[in-house]
Length: 139
Image 1: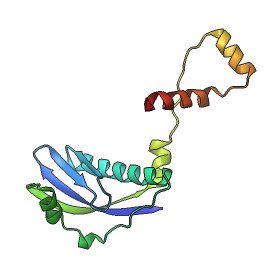
Image 2 (image 1 turned 60 degrees about the vertical axis):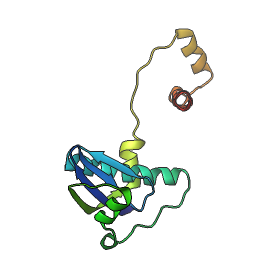
Image 3 (image 1 turned 30 degrees about the vertical axis):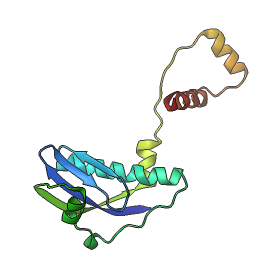
């Protein structure tokens, strides 16, 4: 399903900052407009993906005509030399399949005795490694 949200782009000396006014705390940036646009798509897809994983409600998108970048800048105390609103669209489910859920093949080495014991127990090596890595990353 295609999701479209207005994003406020603010040009400054470091590039572009991007804020999604409908998605609380959702911001990104890029050194060039193209990079900022790509980051905005990634940011939007990631935000929607995480809401879905957490079974949270996805906020309704504002009409782009009702969003004023200058007003958002004033609320944030930002004085960019250039600001504008641009719609960002993404199919979050499709994006997740290609970027967040894509599997990567890894080769690893373990002792022969451990391999034999795991095979005898029909242990799924990929699943065990994923579970262990997820646990380790959360620490």
